[in-house]
Length: 168
Length: 119
Length: 100
Image 1 (tube, one colour):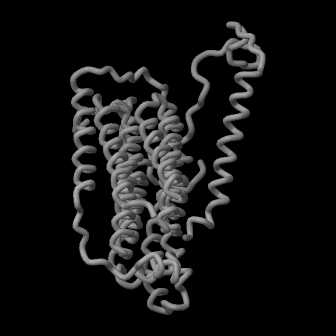
Image 2 (cartoon, one colour):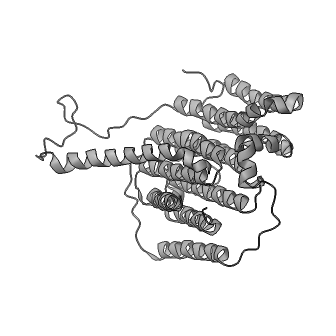
Image 3 (cartoon, helix red, strand yellow):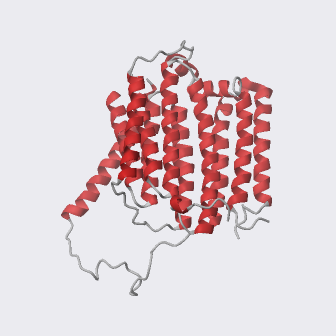
């Protein structure tokens, strides 16, 4: 299981790098789909199946499809956007590597976790992760849940106003 | 561990990757190669090709995909409710009703503004 | 049992790649994809922390992050579309006017 995690993690990092390297945005999008699939596999390994399902359903299935639609809509010619190693690019690499070093250094030091909650792996598998999520989402988190519908409403209205050329 | 139950899917994905790689590599390695300028030209019914191959898609595809994405996310939130439907009773029903009515306003707006029309 | 530290380091790596993508690429759609990648990295760290602390809150938060990502993708891509209609380019360096 640990080996599967390392393989999936490596593939997801490599395909995330592929997003940056590919010149054509279509290849970048497919690379991102691959990365999202690997993350879905990691979620299954970590016993949160429902998150894995929505990762593949919403991210790989819907959001990336929307990206691909826009790319095809604009029919972008793969431009010769080549990365030259001039000073700003080197600074960007430095910032990214420094950020990674800082965050992972933080995680590699001794982390003090807060008090543990009651939802251990046994408790989750007893009730089922979807049922547990449902109980919390519709119980404790009911106000954020209703706020989400307003966010989605705003997103629909905003996207229709901005995206549609001629409004009725 | 729940992850064991998903082992067949992993094996299936692995087999898919392996077979796709094998057949692609076999085509490249074993197949005969005869290259030439005329042969590598894209085939357009005998005419010489001009310009790019792809065509631009209409914005109506984007509008449909947009509405789909929003309601896809809505459906994701209905799964946990469906699992806990009996347990939550009328309170859960009222919550989901408010959620869906608010989103229906969005659908009604998109409909009224003609985002769903296939011109 | 996957060590939580390794999950968090993977998430840090994905986040840094996303940051690098935002800084390096000039195509606005690829920049947008890098932002989605960063959101995913945060999701992964949420799952890692939730499992370490035997909590469910992190998993619930992922739902909210996914909704925000979906709303962001929908509105953001519409904005990209309308900018492309006006400027005929996807290079962010050429988006230099605040008002037309």
